[in-house]
Length: 373
Image 1 (cartoon, rainbow, N blue to C red):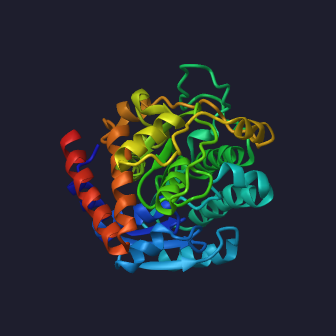
Image 2: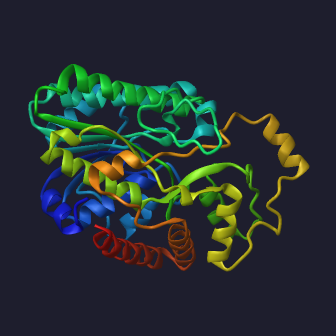
Image 3: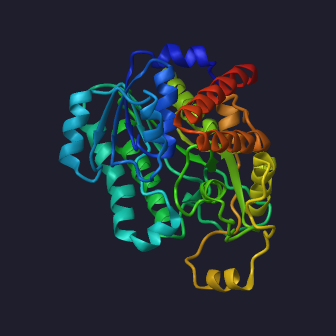
């Protein structure tokens, strides 16, 4: 696990092609890379939410060196941009990332998440320039049998249930195939995939996610409805996977034996129910946004029977990434929720306050990251 200064030494001045830079996690990645002195070239569709962290940061002068608004499904356009940038590093985050949305637009979900990955792998294959690359997928790639207490390991079967999860399973397999078929013995391309847990953090405004729903309820004064308060998920602050993505890319560039497929998930203590997460968020806000009720009403239960399938239990085993990189989670669930609530309160005071809060949080995280290392 590299210190922040060591990561900065690697990324400073490097050209980083970041797909999905207008999304929540992509915006945070851009912010961190900019602080490291990297030259970030973003490639994505317009910001998917309103408000969006991408636009909020942009208003404060924080953003990529270049932002190309384009569709990763268009191979010719992507190939042209890839060749123009000639990146040193590739971080692939572009995706249709919402489970419920994938039921509404399954074809578009598969096109984006599978063929988008194929298109990017082709760009890497056809380029002669050495590159260190990472494909960011999800904890939902596994064939999830929802076994109580079981934490999924990297060698468990891939076969996500819903179109989103399954498309990300396919994206993993595409990456594995390209690695074994074209990159494994060349030495020019270093390539890994990373499967994170459910990220939370200030500035996520995606629909059908519990913390963004809670933040909107807080800002609007509307009581929050919790769909599945008993569902257990591996929650982690967005800084956690972002920093480990950057560490993987850096360390595999130095040592090809560190290429692989990694769970970048939280510890078992951070796998909590959605209901518990909301309670912690309310406590951090200092305000009950649930209307006093976290149990499912008869109406909510009835609506869920007709709703698309969503897993009720999912946890990751993070042993491999700890042993390979010496990593330990830096912020646990309490710190993650507090930071998210603090940003939400700052956002209510305006964009400038929100950006200042996020910058302050990043500095605090870096300090503890170095202490943990």
